[in-house]
Amino acid sequence: MDALTSLTARGADLLESARSATSRRAAAPVFSSPVLKAVLLGLAEGGALAEHAAPPAATLQCLQGTARLYAGDAEWVLNAGDLAAVPAERHGVDAVTDCILLLTVAAGVAPAPVEGTIG
Image: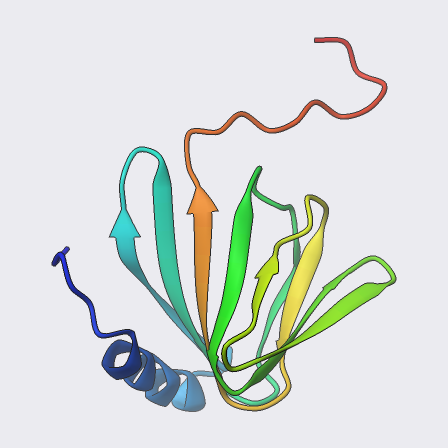
């Protein structure tokens, strides 16, 4: 990976791909190290990342458009320029409009123990 990535240009390419994909989404890694990973996501309006388990620590930044991050009964609407901490529980993302998102995940971090477990 290059030391410098144009998120605007790469995001536009991903969004174009997402618009024609049956899943309405496209993604590409933009940075990876033993401790940090960043993935650029293009979600066409109506596209989604279905509910899934949370990584130990992550943020989701909206670079363009509007997205909805939800977990349980809580939800957050992200507009361009917004950054949200990804909840440490099952969550999902919906594209309210065409959007470009930057997911940053702490890698190599042990997940927090689940309450009621031994260890």
